[in-house]
Length: 105
Image 1 (cartoon, rainbow, N blue to C red):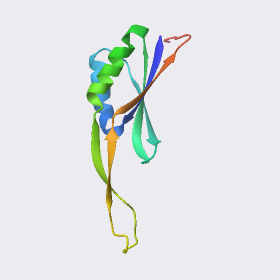
Image 2 (cartoon, rainbow, N blue to C red):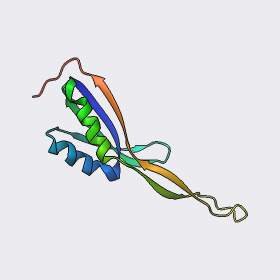
Image 3 (cartoon, rainbow, N blue to C red):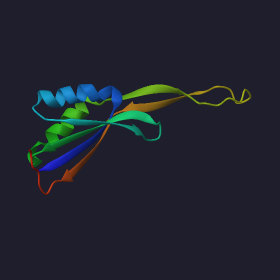
C-alpha cells in the first residue's frame, strides 16, 4: 500500500478531488500555503494499493494543468518602472511513500 501526497494549486484542488472521487478514490485535503510565490495550495492525501498509483497520478495530471499568471514586480522605484512578471502556476507535485501498515477504524 502507498501513501500518495499531492501538492496541488488551490484553483485545481476541487476539480482534482472530484476527478479522484469519480474514480473511487478517497481523498483527504489539507490546505497549505508556501513555496516561492507564497500561494495557497492543497495537500491531497490518498492511501491506495500499489497497482493504483499510476491511475492516481494520471488523474491528477489530467486536471492539474499549467497556467500562466502575471504578477506585479513589487518595485516602487519610478526610475526602474513597473514591470509585471509572468509565472507558471498549476501542475501538481506528487510524492509516493511506502506504508508499512494501514488501519481503517
